[in-house]
Length: 183
Image 1: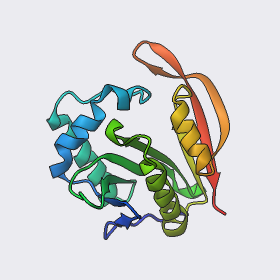
Image 2: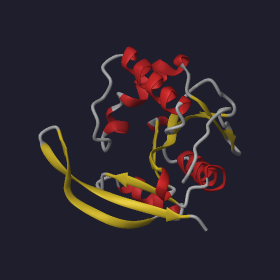
Image 3: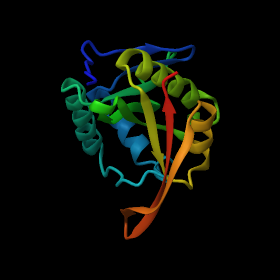
């Protein structure tokens, strides 16, 4: 069975990015990110109502990291490592199947610059080579065409399409599931 160990916290550096632990100091950036209408358009979750909600979210993330249940990184630019511009991480890990779901979001000011592709490739590498996952999945709202394209550009295959399997704000929503296997 898969064993997770995120101590010490694994920081990741790419050509332009620094993936680091999210801290309480990121609460306002998390709030701005997760309350942005464009960012949350296809994220079927309630938006935070205050920076305190952002702080509570960070504390939940870090508790899961400390308990070796899941991991999430702040995405920041190397040139400005203290400013969170997005998040990426593995959650809903099924240890007995060596499988985890990846999720990500990025502030719109940084869309279209290849930043999320760079972060996703780094996270995939970490997932397969450090965590020792056998497969990674991503669940998206199928209306989020850009996310589907990103997943396909990084090697994911759409494996499933569930009609009206998710209920949010009084309506049923479809889900597309993408998967990537270790090489």
